[in-house]
Length: 449
Image 1 (spheres, one colour):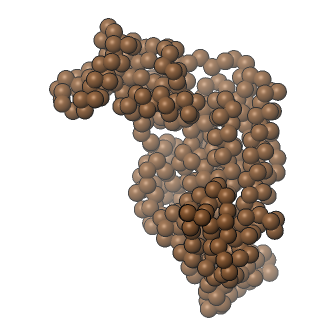
Image 2 (image 1 turned 60 degrees about the vertical axis):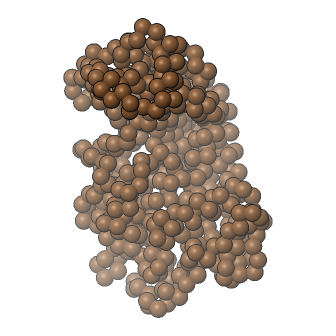
Image 3 (image 1 turned 90 degrees about the vertical axis):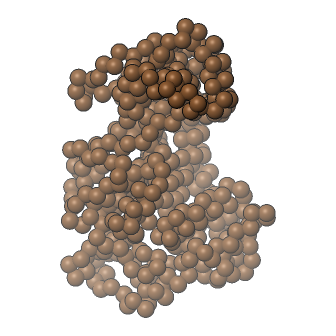
């Protein structure tokens, strides 16, 4: 299975240096003649557009294209032309094309590659891996050190690639502390938490919250707008008496009662005041909760913390919603199997996910059969009824928070509307399996079995 996402080349070298420093990345500087240099064009197609390179580069590199077109001499801004000439004077005095330079964040040369022979791999199994592409030899003593624990009511597994297990333990400890901090921040099981304060004063008064909670609520409301309410953090208002999803449930509730149960679910009734950093739920009985986005947010925060601690490669797995960066100790991309809803012990397909996050929502995990029809535990907040027709939705994108948040609303929206939404978004992919086992994908996915 392949996810096609394009590599991102900058033209501003100074900005790339700033980003490399803040994100703890290296800089890949490419000298090319985009409209006349045949080896440059081949290298772009055969190396830089290769999927595993794109995934690796997204997490490890700031990429700068110093282009010197001849057929379209006026295609670059004058400031870019001047910058490229300065870069060539410093890093490519002989004027060779293509010429590729690996730099640290301060601009120090680490490695160079002169030209490109245009040799394609002999077969698909010899495709360029992210490490082979950059010719960076991995250390032989690297190991994937991992730990599994229960956090946020789920099992988390954190993996760091390291040559020192003791250091790896300290790094994992820091990630666990960060996830525990977020759990305390977002929990609805602690009366003193800011989220519970928001819920307690629903319909009464606004509640001042920290910047982190405010921004998470703000981002959640934007996703609600994007999905037309299919994602909604006011889902906590749902009266759960109608949906227990166990063997005692043998009939659907009355439609009017179902609508009554979801009457308070409406993200538009969450009022934000940026000036005072307050959140106000308009009506009494309203409740917010971060069950649809919290795990992904925590995984993303843990990843960023580990990167800041110098962890070049790793995985944060929040009960199947996971995010990866870098590569395995041997230099190969991280790879996972996507569960087959009909046989969870047998992967449906495999996916290289270095530099990506993945989240899956599936009715096969919790559902009831009524009248011979499968009803998912996922409730449509507009109708109060569970959705049907889809067994699983898998979202793949660079950010764990977004992946987590989009899996459920795509399930609710249905195959056609869900894929239409995903196809309009940048750098996000989707795989849907319906109740009959038929597979549907977004436009940027090509399945191979």
